[in-house]
Amino acid sequence: MTRNARRPGFTLMELIVVIAVIALLAGLTAPALFRNVGDARIAAARADLATISLALESYALSVGDYPSTQQGLEVLVRNPGVGAVWKGPYLKGQVPKDPWGRAFVYQYPGKGVAGTYDLMTYGRDGAAGGTGEDADAVAGEGAAR
Image (cartoon, rainbow, N blue to C red; front, top):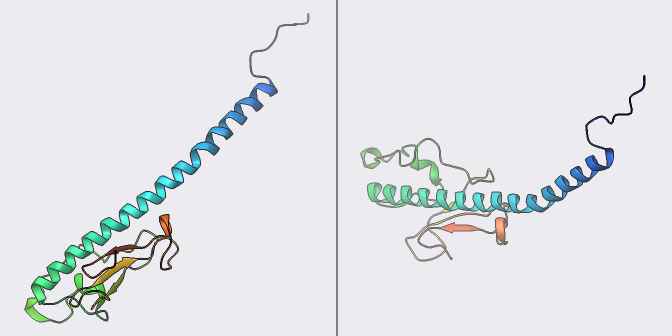
């Protein structure tokens, strides 16, 4: 006894068509997904810059001036030896790194108006300038925006 009944399932051609459609959809959506990841990193960098700026303002109110470039941002989490005027820590935990794993760039006095600081990240590429995710994110009273 032989059976001529067709077994249920997909033919090879049907499987190839389905795989091609899935690959096409993945190819169309992947760039948008990666663009959103880049936008999220830029937003995170700006949020961290705002948080550090607030901590610098609190430090300056307590101590009477912003930390020097040599002291850096570490004085926001550890007393630099200024005695009782230090009311920190001004940041929880450690000083955050930018979303690309590098330290934020801090300079006081800044290059702008006297008595101000510059605070920035150079973006994904780590170099000045750029566009998109490579663009600099800048904060601080003396920053060139």
